[in-house]
Amino acid sequence: MDLFSHRGTDLLVRAFLSLETEEECRALLEDLLTTREVLDLSQRLLVARLLDRQMVYSEIVRETGASSATISRVNRCYTYGAGGYTTILPRIAEAGDSEAEEPTP
Image 1 (cartoon, rainbow, N blue to C red):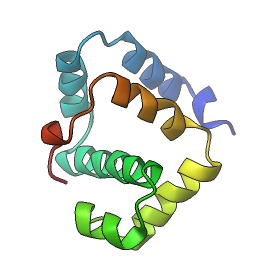
Image 2 (image 1 turned 45 degrees about the vertical axis):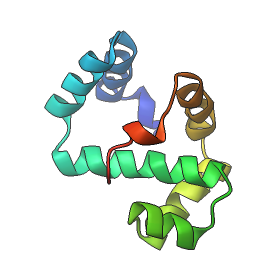
Image 3 (image 1 turned 180 degrees about the horizontal axis):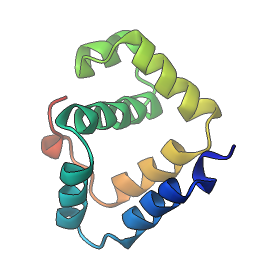
């Protein structure tokens, strides 16, 4: 079964595509996800960004607090996945991604 052929997942994708501002996105994430889920997803994006910057696992663990299993999973998706990380990371950088604005995981 294709994960995104399900009616609910299609609705989720369309919901994210309909968002127009960061405020709208934050509101949807707050309503949709638990605090732990938001933090976990945020940590994965941070790990992907650090992998993209060629940082080694031990430095990523120190920087993010992510487990080596999480880093390995993100690395596998970053390297062999559907391309989501490699699509979004340059866009985040272009949009003014700032170290100072990063939430602590």
